[in-house]
Amino acid sequence: EYDKPIFSQAVKLLEGKVVSLPGYMVPFENGSVSGKKFILTSLPLNACFFCGVGGPESVIEVILKEEITYTEKPVEIKGILRLNDEDPDRMIYRIEQAEYLGEVEF
Image (tube, rainbow, N blue to C red; front, top):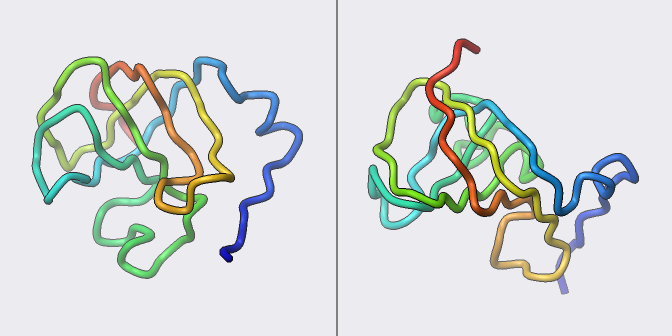
């Protein structure tokens, strides 16, 4: 048994909708620096959830339409928000069919 996330009504209303988010890229698959899948975090890699700061709500799994190259600079991503309270092996937030909108000032 694992702790299931509880989503607020405001977050539930965004399920399935297109959202845009700024954040920092974290390599996902074997530390690869390019690909269609990565983790977006609200904090730079040296302060992210996996390094002990923040919780699972501070990261989101991103699945891109097209492959991009990793950057340490903050980026903006747009795609369809999916909520996950069923599969403990996946992130609680996911953006599917995502597009890379470019680097942003944070």
